[in-house]
Length: 368
Image (cartoon, rainbow, N blue to C red; front, top):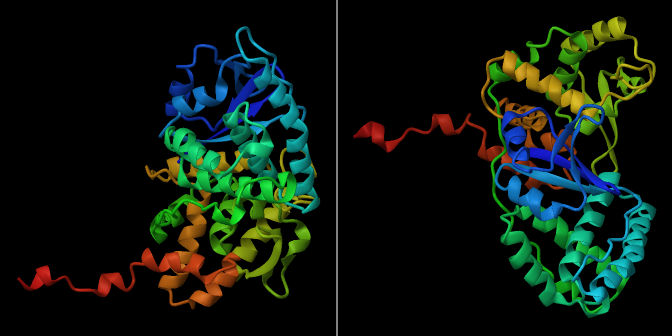
């Protein structure tokens, strides 16, 4: 699924996404939307009912990440709108701030803080005039049915909202919700997207720029997440031990992954050519971390050049790494360690996409 990032500011909303003709065509259906080359974003006036409008416009097309600026303005009462509702929104703002402060004190990642705080904003706005102390489990059920399901939002988003609600009412509000009776949606059983070795090879060999080729190669060769690659520093490469140290990745964990001679040689050639000063991969300015958007564009151009029409994402390379390891006979427990999974159940999904054993099965059709 494609991704869109919407950031709410005082008097406007900035909508950003990688260049995509389908997404551009969709956002142009919003009459108020105007492209701003300086901001590199589509700008929409704040008076538009944006949350509903964005979900309606991109339903079934893209996953929307909502973010509000740190200083959230108090909504003014419009003509005919009950005063009590506006007062309730004013009262809820400090408690959302308290929730954010709690999450930061527990050292949640900024992405999680944004996700959880925005989820609570959406939920509390949905409950409208109802005071926080009167919100109960039935309100959560109603929200799931009348907001999430009615808009066709994903089970993963619903799960994020339920996580946020549980944490908020357990640690901040301490109100009438019966936390243990709040259940997450049934998990969707989707198989990871995997590329063949030939497809991976063509993608990795597509970039002419040595930095771009090295970035994509490390993601596949070490099974890294996007953020893990961008957070690598020069000191994380240990040539003598032929390992790469991944520091404070998902779940605040460190782990090590092996480096092959072939990959080390590629990294050495890249370092001689680029000479980064801090991060392993830096942006145009020295000492500046390479951006996620630029990395996504590198992959997009490589996929196009390789002639692959599948909607490949960076995470596909990680999935392909794990599946190819399994097909080469690597024990599942080692793959779990290399990927940094907490549970072996997460890693076991790759057994469902590995074709090595399946291809040996003879269909009874052949005996007819």
